[in-house]
Structures are given as C-alpha cells and as structure tokens.
Image 1: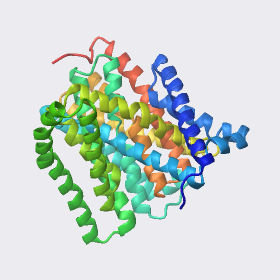
Image 2: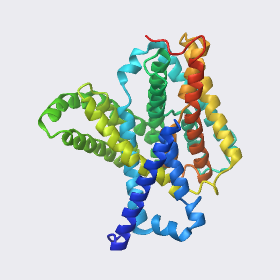
Image 3: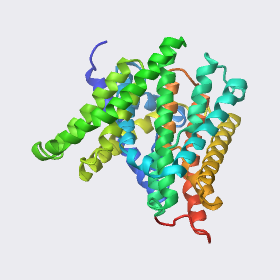
Length: 417
C-alpha cells in the first residue's frame, strides 16, 4: 500500500474538517434543545452520508468522503483510534470505590439490571433469530452479543443527565451511577470474550484461557498497575510540563494497553477501557488533568467517530421498523424491569425504583460503540446496527424527562444522603 497522494491528502483534510465543523454546529444545537450531544453528531453523519448527501449529490459525497482506497483506510484508522480513546475516557468515569460504598442496593440493582435484559436478548436471539430478520453465521455468538447489547448502559450520558437534573449526589443518582458502572464493566468484558471467540472457535480450553486472560489482566491493572500509577502521577504532574506531560503519558498508557489486548486477540477497546479505569480511579490524578483528557477526546475524537457512523451507513436503506421496534422494546423492558426490581430488592420505594430503572435505560454512546464494533467483525448486519443506534438515541433522550417528572412528585427521588 502506497502513501497518500497530494489530492488524497487534501481529501482527507477536507473530510476531517467538514466532520468536525458540522459536528460542532450540531452539538451546540443539541445542547440548546437539551438533547445528548451524540444525537447531533450522528444526525450530522446521516445528513452528510449516503442517506442524504450521497443520495442527492453522489459525486460531491464521493469526493468529500472517499470511503475506499487510501483515504478510506486513513479514515477507518482514525475511527478505530477514536473508539479506543472513547473507551479510555469512559473507563475514567468508573470509580471502583463507589461500587463498594453503595452496598446492598447497588448489588441487587446492578445484577438484575444486567441479568434480566441479558436473558431476554439472548433468549430471543438464540431461539427466534428470525425476529431480527437476520440469519447469523454463529447463532450462539449472535445471541451472546444481543444479550450484551440489551444489558449495557451509557455511563457518560447517564452522569450528564443526572447532573443536569441536580440528582447526581442523590440516593437515586448514586445507585444509578454505581449500577451503570457495573453493567458497563461486565458488558465490555463479555463483549471482548465474544470477539476473541470469533477467531478461536469454542474449544473449552481456549474459552477458559481467554476468560483467565481477561480477568487476570483486569486484576493486574487495577491492583499493581493502579499502585504504580498512584506513585508516578504526583511526580509526573509536578516535574513534567503541564498539562502536556500527564496528557501524553496517559494516552500512551491507553495505547499500550489497547495494543496488548488487541495482540491477545481480545480487542483493543478492552485494554483502553481497563487503562481508563486504572487512571481515572487514582486519587492522585489532578482534577484539571482529568478534565483536559476528557475535553480533548470528547471534542475531537468523539465527533469524528460518531459522524463517521452516518457517513458509512445508509440509515434509510437499512431501516426496518419492525426490527427497530423489537430491539427498542426488548432493551427498554429488560433494563427498566430489571433495574426497578433490583432497586426494590435493595429496599428503595417504588417511585424511586422506577426512576432508577428509567435512569439506567439510557444507552447513548456506549451502545453505539458496541454496535459499531460488532458490525465491523460481522456479528450483526446494517439493519440491526441502525436499530441499535436508534434505540440508543431514543432511550437517552427519554430518560431525562422521565427522571424529571418522577422527581417533581410528592415522593421526590432527589433525597440527599
């Protein structure tokens, strides 16, 4: 493969410039409408992609966003790096101490909000795969993925929604965050195992080896790795240039960890996710440094990733109303029911339990990243992917208004500790 020609390099620069520019406009519009920013970024991708621009002006679309050849490879590489960095930042949102502190309510809510939607998604996909208008190459792996997709939440979206509603530090808010952390952690571990099984078959010895490697690497990074980070961060933040030192070393750590898990055949995003947990969970990390890393990734790489989704997929051609409705109902029924029953088992009143259920139902960016990776490796087709994206957006938009309504009743859900 040769290097980019003069014209191809110009095309790459124009594509990235257009993606960032229009994504920013859409993001600001979404903020004004109090919608998740990812909604605007994906909408821009749909408008700039084959669904609209490519359909109305195919020549202009092909010249602005060449999806094949050298430029297409470069854009694909940037998209994959963006996914790695997004999972790193998402991992930084997790606080392991919070999971431990919430006690019984966090345990019951986390488990039921994970198990019930997983079983619903797995059962329907395994026993009635025709419900999704799709014949999978491997029925078991497809069912495992659908169970995982129904189980995962979107911690960044959930945290932002709770902050906007002034509920982040409430009893309900803390349980929602703790359960979302647990669901995302287990969900990405299971998904990484599914990815590894795609290339290695389902021999018992290989499955056990993959499980051991995933668990062992996570434990190593969150114990010894975290201690090393705690000891080195004060020196890095004091002795090296600010903020470049901590930013460059944190991202290099992310890439090294991602490269290691990719080498093992698990997936780069798991390494980035675990690295993010190790870095973000450190009490030694400067608050400003955390914010700089977050802003850097979410304002540059996140828009490139989410806009690229709409540019690569024709949402109109691959939209199926029945599949979308099934996935939306399956995801919402499983997550809301599971989280509500889990919160009730944790001795929360019914109103607060329902609020927790709807709060955890927001899927946002995490669901979309999960679906993108599954599409890339052939676990799902474009129709299911489009349905997952729509489900993620609708559940993210709906969670805020429902939480706001539940919080205005006589039995308020914003009781403080």
